[in-house]
Image 1 (cartoon, one colour):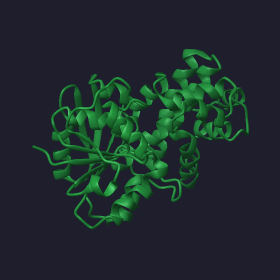
Image 2: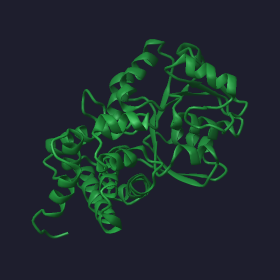
Image 3: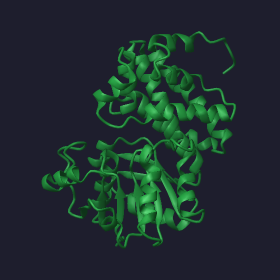
Image 4: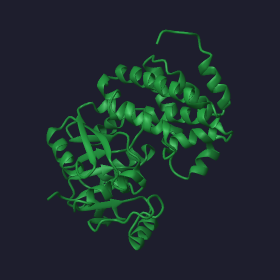
Length: 331
């Protein structure tokens, strides 16, 4: 029997994973920023905002108080947007020095320090804290519904890895393990940016050829930056790289793809975000990824032009034309 896990973040992804874990009877404390939303979830027995119609298993306990959610808990899963990741860890730290193990499913970079999230974890809790990141081609609704899903778990801590696999790997949810924290995190951040480009192209009606080119050349950008920062080639060819990239670029369940579609259809970034009504990680992370590339002298033309469209510097059509009219080069 597993001990209680605290899931911090009651959006679609945090809730979906809490439901998945709780289906085996694991006790889950689900905490979110907004007490009113948690109260409504408790009343209705589901997350009616993000995952309507999918009931909570009995072992999910909704906790509006963070201190209560963490009481006696060793394992924490952080599922808040990247913009709130560091502040959430600081709140956890302020509540005491009890031994913790941190798993996160947040996708993106830290907006203030422009770094990967494992660096924020280590800065907050020390370099010896057991930590892991879970990422891969996985839409929240399909996970919550119990549809087949395969995902990558990256960690350097063997005991934590084994415990997490025993928690997550059940029913039709398959976990593959690796120790490439850098590569898995970069894959999850960069694929969101490329999904915006794919959405822009489709919003303009440019067809399947253009979309396939963007996915393929986007993968090349991911690999270039990933290898420069110490990621492993096989990570980018796997679930957390190519797998998540293909999913996010081709299915309208992706908020980042829908964001791009609306940009391609003529809306500005704020209008598109307002229409989607949820956090769109790429809106903030595209520029962070580009800055990381510049800091490491890595050429990322798709990312560059996505940033220009989001910033209103060029039109969506001009961005695609700019990419297609670049000088010929070897693949």
